[in-house]
Image 1: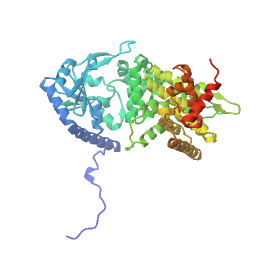
Image 2 (image 1 turned 135 degrees about the vertical axis):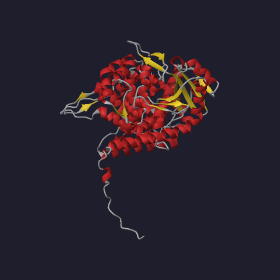
Image 3 (image 1 turned 180 degrees about the horizontal axis):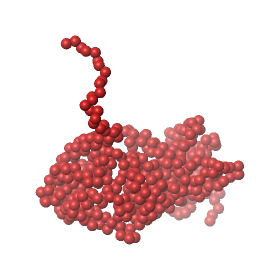
Image 4 (image 1 turned 90 degrees about the horizontal axis):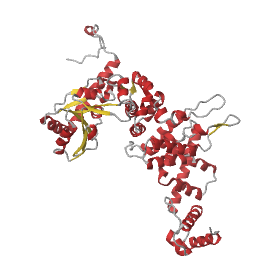
Length: 509
């Protein structure tokens, strides 16, 4: 039979009376289908450990389910090596079961119902069904154990984290519509947000965390409850607030989480320096919106993190990100309106470093993180005298020496601090910093630049001057280091001559 010419499509009249799904419904259906396929695929990958553990608990007469973030991430196709489980077994019973099965186990969280374990490459946390409630002004939650999976899921922060897969039968449990919310990319609480945040105020911070990590929108009712109840975050310990803030800052999109903290008033309590950056700009004294500038600097610093990694997805650099977030916090305190309509922020880097140190200490950050972030804030303007053409080898040495092991981060912070929309100005700044880095590289080829020390050590100083250990040796050492900064490396003979010259002109104390 000869080929027939193509005919135009004709409407199927038999279907005209049937209601057609809205485009949004088709998108949702497709998203759900994709999520379910991902879940199956990820469960198959984890099957050796998941099935084995499920069978172990079932044989002991206990229920077990994969829960929370593990199910959410499986649905997103990114299940990691850390798995979370919930069970009706009490902590002591969990411990007994894991001790006979896992390669290693630990009891750090057993008081809160959690026992950790390692099986092969998998890290597991198995937790008794539980509830957490803050009482009155208590800074620590009261933990009670429950008996049902549904009750355990109800206490969770968000519907997308309130799904489970029972084991070993692999029944998907979603009593609060978490799968629909995952497909719609929205963050809601399983019950009334007011009840959830009243039970555990830290859940408000977790909403911001998942906004930063997942890029999902937040349900208006949740935002309203966060705004109304923001003050309740004050009863949560600084350590728990810090941990959530770290996860927000280290998320893939921290702007969303930080913006939510500011707009709901939570930042006024946990990080008050951030909302204070939204300086008013009147018609006579125009300057950059420091708050928006700060968020842009943070994003640009993150881009420089990823740029150096082979996969473009480098590990978050907490110190760099915190420095970008805090680098201008001294501006509100140092702002001055100048004659002619200008605005100045003299010494805001010094004031900002002190403020940064105080805030991170209040949030119980480790001392090394606190000091590194404060130092970067203090140094972030040092580069801006370079373009004047007055820098020397000595100035470059001091720049490198003052930055010490933070030099690479200082490079990134300084480059990120350029948010001008003027392409010519931005290009000039980039080329100027390229020039500084090239100068540093040239000096590195000529001398030991990264750990500048005097050309004579303490022992040599004592031998040459014939003095015992004491303060004078330290003064001589510091003098020789200054000479090293200014002149570069000296020979042993020239260093000794300089030491003797300094000694001869010194006024004994």
